[in-house]
Figure 1 (cartoon, rainbow, N blue to C red):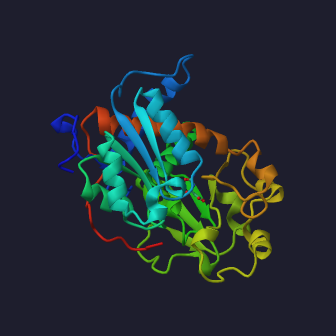
Figure 2: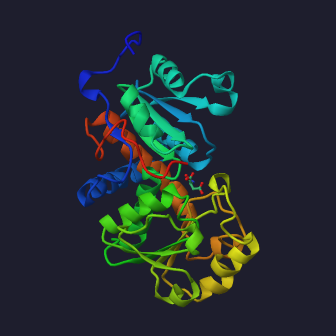
Figure 3: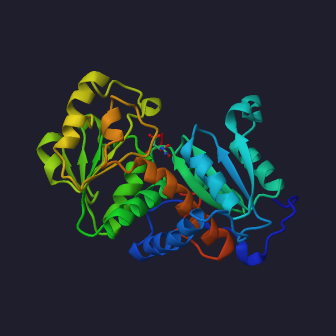
Length: 331
Ligand code: NCD
């Protein structure tokens, strides 16, 4: 990094958001409280403030994304930061360039903060160890996706005032879901009870110690839930036949119109997207009045504004950082 012109103030060095692990209730609440401010800015006729003028946010995605990437870009622009995007598909990665060299090139273009997504668990931690820039983990393999969990908590809190005492079912491919890992930590830290609902083959091998209960059938508990959180079957991470067929999976776990009708009238339906209609959720359930899936999309921008502002504009560290540590659950 010595060849890089560092135009940032010294007190801006290396603050990161790498995971919900290591954050406590007050850390989470601070971000959610600040998100209210940025949600208000988003409702203005001109939803833009100068808070991060002169700063550059780079989205560094080695894996596909629609919502996460676009919402980080919108969030950065609403804070008047510049944005620069790295696309794995059209980059020199195909010529054999390493992740580390790629990151150093992006840093040399003057980025202040890297938003990193990669299919390998621990990548954002490693990047944080290589650079002086701030790093936000936008998904590392099956490990964590902290801003998704924050926007989900914000969405639940917006509707319910608090997660305290809520009973939330996380349904589906928990084993390969970084969203599930981050959300189990965040929901329980904020006082909710989490039930994992999945066939045994789609649960992580080492689930002891998770602060959850586990059931293998959805129908018996549907009427007792305050919220259901559907997960996509992560086909890109499944290397062996873990479910007999998508049709059989759907018959047991898909949130259909019939199943939604058996939920409480004030229960909430969440999904991080992208949805596979007819597999984990039906079109009717996704658009039911209990669904807050589009609220999640809108809130994603406000939460990410709060995170960018806290890291680049306020001099705060978000959560524990252990750059370079190896992380369980690779790929
Ligand atoms: C999730 C992800 O990429 O981990 N999507 C997202 O960020 N909105 C979940 C998924 O891909 O199923």
